[in-house]
Length: 469
Image: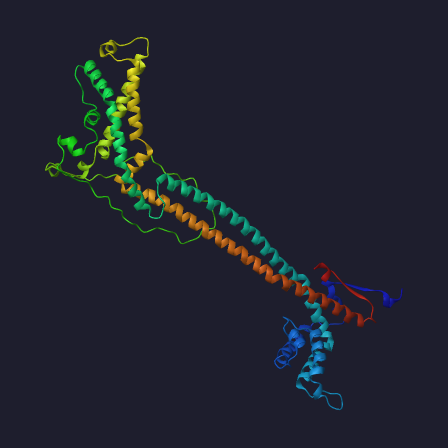
């Protein structure tokens, strides 16, 4: 094989060292290149209208090979300035010919081209690829996060819907809707009152039994006895034995409070609790129920005011007494039933003429009334009517879930927008990557050709260059 046929293989990373070691380039080429760059910047300020020239000048970096092509094009545009000796009178042509001359002196152009090739292969192209990969990864993460937010949103909305259904409201005006629901209480109390009358045999039996065993009737369940005989009257009538001439019930006001919405968006969901449920079992004390206290003398005029205007089942104080007396008579009947079902029966059983079936029936009537008065829904409405703090708690619970949903929706939208932004960034970077790879291939080919000229046109292969891209 002839020497001129033996290829010259140069690794990209060693290209500049190879050129310098063979004295093709000097170590101070960068100082000379700075002078050339300044002249290029001045020269491009005055250029003829030509589409290819405009395309060459639009690149981010104009190298020696671009300058050679510009000179070729200027030979066409500046042809009319050529004199008899073949020289151009155009300043444009003189400027660019000087640039080429400075480039070719000490092979500055070759050092610059090698440096640009190495930079593109080692840094520019890999960095753009990393940016695109990062954008794609960000899009995947955003899609995953968006799906998580969507699931949380559906879950939160389902829980909010369940809570509002449980409360019987739409959530548009929470406090007002809750207050409006207490209009159901009179019908509920009417139903309970009608069932209380069926308890009269149980009350009579209890009183007769205690009178027989103790020797006198004790007044431990006076409210039960009264309700059985007179129904659910006002507290005033119960206390004073006469119906009031008029009733002035306390007015229930709906106080609109400012929402405490949080403006900040928290993309994290670790602290989001989707298992909140309304607790109907809040005691009157925990709910902060405060019954208006009306002096007795004000009610003795025949006008039922304040707490005296409430019915016995509605008045928080008498309601508690009623429930306690229900529990007392229920415990009594359960104990009597247990004793009567035993082998040894007390003498009092025969003398009171009550059967096991009769006592069981009495217990059933008491259990029904107890279930009605302690029903969670009834207790819930009762607390709404008498406890502003209870209403506040329910309002805050609903508002919290509403605000939570708003935050989730905002977070979902934000992460979706970020994903779309990543797609757009990748879309803009892709043609830029393709262009720089294409230009780098051209540059490598041009460098190989220039080196080949210096070695009698031997084939030159720059290894690990554009092939790795």
